[in-house]
Image (cartoon, rainbow, N blue to C red):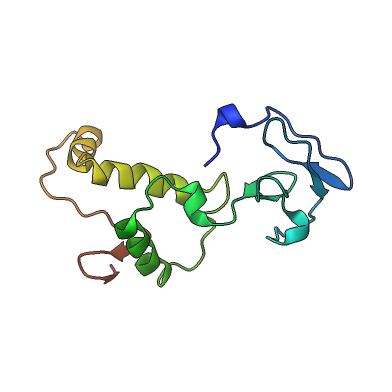
Length: 141
């Protein structure tokens, strides 16, 4: 995952090309129009990300996620069977943000404390249900 320190503050976009958003990369790629496509002609040859004038997408969704051990990938695979669409590989993905934040809270055993704090009520039991998928029931809840 690329952070702000690795990204340019502005990228050059003209009518035909988009520049790679990573600092010190001079690659310019054919500009996409209308619908985002993860095709090789729109991919930076150095960083292997797909570019458009407004966003970029990693080759794999795991490249945009903080939690990708075997257990995480298995959970994501189960969720993917019931989740209708996913743009987790996009750099500005709300789904990736949700995964990164809530999976962190769950893995660090901070979910109950977090929910207690924001609800101003003691929360004793929690189950992290992502995109309607219940790991306990192994189904959509």
